[in-house]
Image (cartoon, rainbow, N blue to C red; front, side):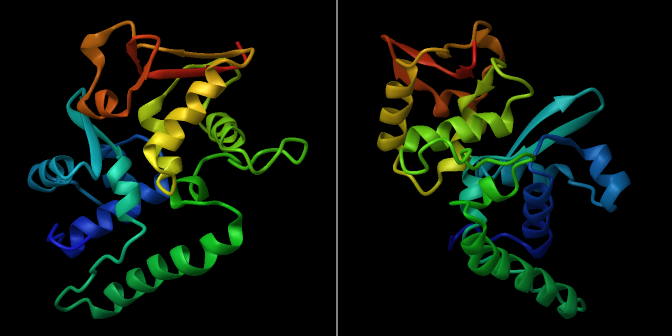
Length: 213
């Protein structure tokens, strides 16, 4: 995505958050990887909507945002003076994940590939309909059947699908037994990303999906 002027360090932050595929504390990033996401980097990546961040105690919780997952589908520049081998390794890793591993995995996007659980529909379910992918993505994100999952977390799994098509699939799915799509009851907790990911349904903006209720 030309024009965002990401530095090698900022690109590396996106790679780490892609690999984690979850919300992770900056203190954990420091302890685990020696990576400290400082305020200028955090502010820039948040402004670009590549990273979602929120204050958590004395630190920040970070995760790859919708546009961040989409950005990972395009080349990143890891060129760094004095660290050409490291840059080459990261460039090769990203390129081969996207162009070789993803193509063989059966997943449509890197968001699906890095989900913490299997996002593909079970063999007994049709693999074609978009609704089956939504159900599979929900299962990857939900702690248990019937748990609420935000549409903000769901949408990155469908970076390859036009938004209108995904919205229509969600509306069709909402008419199925055991499926509920609802607004967030505490509107004060909504982030800009939550608002942007909302689905217009039943005359109101909805932010949450539950399946198996």
